Length: 222
Image (cartoon, rainbow, N blue to C red; front, top):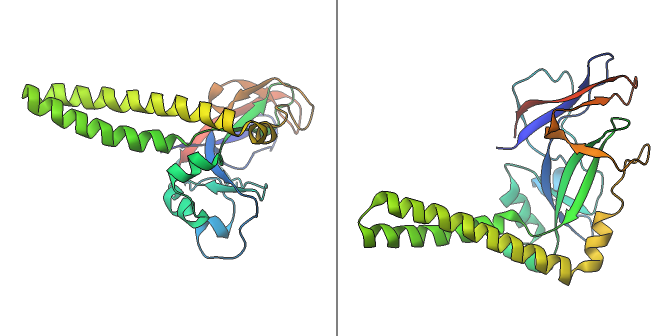
């Protein structure tokens, strides 16, 4: 369950929308129009169950119409509405990983995007392979723990191999698209290339009052 964060200043009233540290999205040529499912209803980046005080903050939204957000926990349903499967998405080179970062010089929240292979593909292949290998090892050695260890190791190994192969395929096969999706990785407000992930626990300058009192904290789960 992805963690939901909010940036809040300790000196003034500034408080951001709530958002996950990262999420996946499908890059489309034509933005979807109409329909009734999550992919067509908006571009919220996650569902949220808040456990901390977040005031009247809304869930952040993706403003780029080319990106259909695979918001947790409805990724499978949204993906189906785009017409892709995880395998098809990987082959077509249209999965975008979106990370939320904070500028270390002015405190502005912005996105860093990367065209890559969907992690769910490696997870699916790993789980199936791990189950088969684990059962086979457990029966052969007549040991639950050896079977469990084999399954766990197989899952991790498959995820690593599939992830690396998928990343290499995407970056080589869709080199131009990868450059276009990545774009400039600098703050849209001050132009600085110095930024940190929202999980870093650093204290940043506030984009509203400029005091170094902006903290990003966990406020819920998606």
